Image (cartoon, rainbow, N blue to C red; front, side):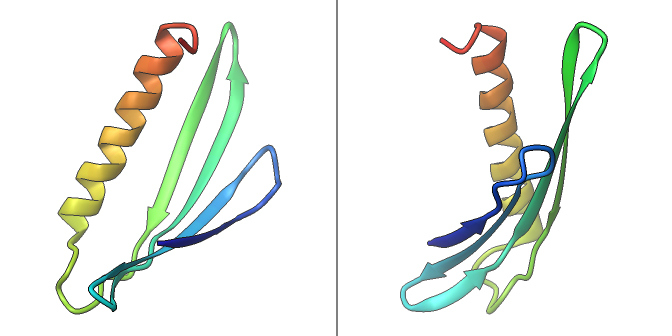
Length: 81
């Protein structure tokens, strides 16, 4: 896996390329936007993907992204512990 990201603190962007057995599987790009909302912070994630050679699917990417966001939510709910 390789990735690039920005240093923009308001809308960080991440791009990654996933390779399986020397074959590109998928190349997603994600943009995160966070903003204050009264006593909390809101987060929006927009992800686009290119799926190559049938090694990854949109459903698999969605499942993985949802698992990461759920883990982040759990971590933040526990106060970052």
